Image: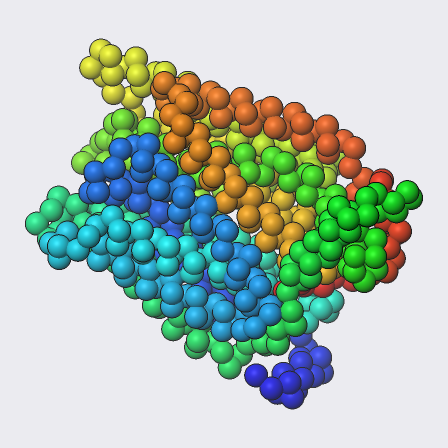
Length: 507
């Protein structure tokens, strides 16, 4: 888009009263549809792999987490493409079409009467979906932020992020409710209907593209200016190469003279923050097992609610979305004000610590439940699926404190030029977490599901113990708008002087 129309649009916004940008509602609806589409497919994926493609539980778990790993590796690619070449709008649109194609391919792979090769076609569909959802992930939220004029609309921007996160959980909850019903509806001569369960996400992605394009006349679209992640990698590579060739220089940092002073200063801050990313992969490893190991656990349980109503194994995942939305509201109204008055959990790192420990507790609950389930099965009994609610409650607590704390910490502490880089790296930790699950499952280290749950709970607790030590030694930078030149003397204590009186959205 030409610069002049964009400048005219910005000037009109400055002159007129700053109303809430109508364009963001298209973006929020799109995010709700995308999350519904993704979580609908993911909710039934392991059951499709096990029941229709006849994979073992371990093999289905490996495929599931390989797919998740790929999804969260693509945000870096999407960010580079958007910032360097296509811009956010075209990147979101083109990759959404790839996303929709992947859903269509996956739906066709479930249509067994067509005689298509089921597993290979499923892998192709999952790869296309991973490229689509991962590629647009770093673009959608920041594209929404681009619609606001800052700092004048700072409060409206904050409201947008809350509404955006709420829309995500609405999509997750609806997916957990609707898709399992489609799966269990007889069709095409089968007792189940996976083609419909995968076909609905495909239809939603097509709708997503239509709604997104409909809002184009209202969008403020910024030209791509180059991706800082590429510059960071080049600078670090030069610094490491010089360190290898010339050795360590007394009194200087290995990054000094590897690039512009402002970029080097920002990278030093970035590297200090990455040390605190230690617990992220383990947390996401546990979190993503909701869709694999916890679903298989639910298969063992009785879902009869009485009155002819049955709660299906893949519907239990909606408990997480319901808990998260409830806890966000309760925390906003009651818990956060109490904690603020008591001066408890008043930093992101403290909240992340508690959230990680809550994730460990959730897996302790899952392990204890598994013991109970196994003992009942020995005498011909069956535990009820509602016994999974406690583990979902503690995992929801973990998400509210840990996941939101990660976003807040990364945004507040990262330099201006590194905010999108930090978010891309934090998303990549989800991919690393799924890699952990893949390796552990492939090695068949555990004799029983109970042992597996106990080990993961212990691993999370151990990682959080190390994290508490690191967090206690961290000095907050608190520099949402500190110019990079003021951080050129960044030292070991990570203390930086600067102004935080303004607020900016990074692409």
